[in-house]
Amino acid sequence: MPRRFDDMALGSIELFCLAAELGGFTAAAATAGVTPAAVSRSVARLEERMGVRLFVRTTRHMRLTDAGRVYYEQCRQALDQLVEAERVAAGEQLHPVGTLRISAPTTYAHYRLLPLLPEFRELHPEVRVEIHVGNRNVDFSEEGFDLAIRVRSPGDSGLIVRHLEDAALVVVGSPTYLARRGTPNSLDDLREHDCIQFDLPSSGRRITWLFKDQGNDIELRTEGGYSLSEDVLGGVTLARHGAGLFQTYRFVVEGDLRAGRLVEVLQQASGRSRPFNLLYPSSRHVPFRVRSFIDFLVNKMT
Image (cartoon, rainbow, N blue to C red; front, side, top):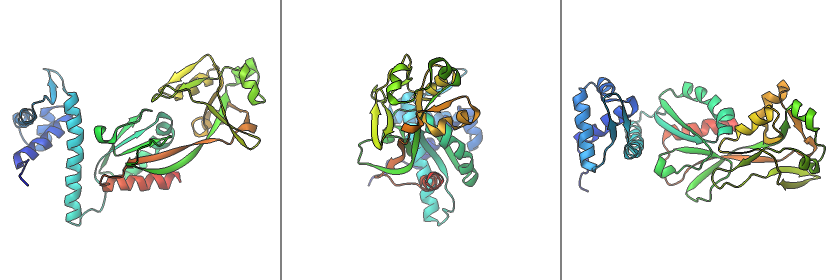
């Protein structure tokens, strides 16, 4: 097989990644022990080779172009794998290294994932963690993610799905709202209440509320004067300030329930949950840092 990359090209890629991570040629040069001019020439060689601009440079700022961002994400992953391959070949893979890229929805990120990451990095300090907090489905191959946490498993046979937990759902309202509008005693009473709505970012479909009534699973369409999209935590904030009732995960509002800022209602119809799953590509070699994090998170959540 003919060579596509010589030593100079690989060195240029490393310097390009350093410049992208540190935000400038001077910082990259200081870290690599070369001159800023050497970093500039390396990036210029890459841009000429591919026929695209990797950075937008002004007198004060430097940032990656869209093409540069995609190229950086793929190169960073490839360089991490090269480092890992050397460690494996030399029998030196005693601990995980490299960059771990994770996507998680807002609720799970704030109340489950983010609080655990300092413990993970204390165990594995050579792993750098990049977190995307958002509710859209990410593209593993295009965006370079290693893992994603989602409620609904996409119909993609190329993904491995590891179950993390079934998160219990509750309906809550503030004491001021309940004093003003009354406490619902049955599912039929919800027709008389402001039920805060949430629309799925991926489809725009309004989420139905889930209940268990006399042993039967019920999906109920509710109505109200507020609807949100993208950030489901906005519904909790609205409920906390008296806007209406909201169905959310118990782990999100546990503190509010203990402090009395929110009150759980319709407890007789509770008992439903939604599953959270950990997703990662099945066709890709799973680096040691990714395997280590999978084991860590599954052990914590199951």
